[in-house]
Length: 322
Image 1 (spheres, rainbow, N blue to C red):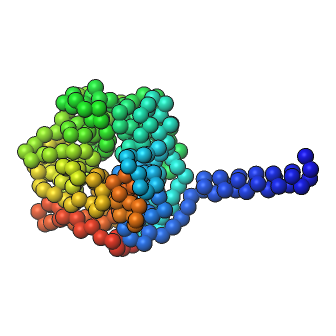
Image 2 (tube, rainbow, N blue to C red; image 1 turned 90 degrees about the vertical axis):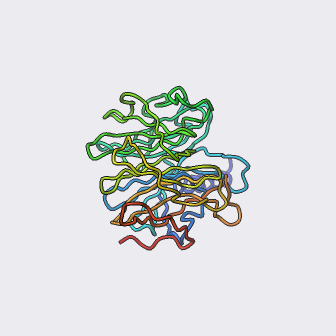
Image 3 (tube, rainbow, N blue to C red; image 1 turned 180 degrees about the vertical axis):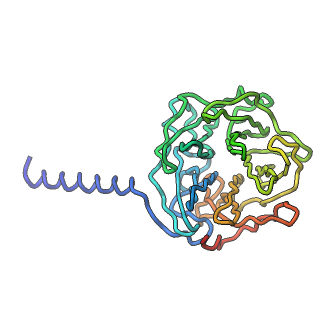
């Protein structure tokens, strides 16, 4: 091979290597409002606060104009002020779960316990899995080599996508819980190792509970709040209880249909003394939609009696969190 050809190949190899390396490095950017990410299509947000940093985990829709859900990996972002964000290297892919035959990287939730980070994910047909990492940015790896939950655990369901949308919550006494489901809402305790179900799987039911999917539990001033997607196209409704297992009382709609998206999936989190409602819509112009969604953030407010004020979805988004 000539010196000229060798030099070209070396230069090409260096350029490719540099490009790959750049893609593997964290990328920093500023949010300009809602949607907060416009360089990628993101959905199904889940938030975790660690010290002075908010970690945001999302699904990853394919590029605009899709006719169905195409999701092959998950993304992770972090911020200390809700404006300046870091996108970390891809932390988890559906192919990291050898048992996940469906190939769908559906909604998930990350929880920290005992210095480990556990990512509960849904794969549509195959069930709910859990991955683990030593760092909130990952990389995560399959903790079980099999599903944590499958349709067999969804005893009141008959359709094949019942076992989706896991959300976890650790109560003040240290007990971890997991909620999930489509059409029916299930819950159970997690063992201290966070990768086994502890005891009986139960179902949440109460008057006015028209549950579609996307359960999320948060707690404030001794009250438990269950938010969830209802009907289709989806709105977010909520209920309240004095105990995590209920009984829950339906309180109404929290968030209306999020523009240009049939689904609506939320995270509720307190960060630097302010509560936030994180959700997705189809708001990227002009290629957003139900299958190419985008994560947004607006503030969450409480009434004096503890009930929630309805979310005002904005283009401007939130102010810096100081």
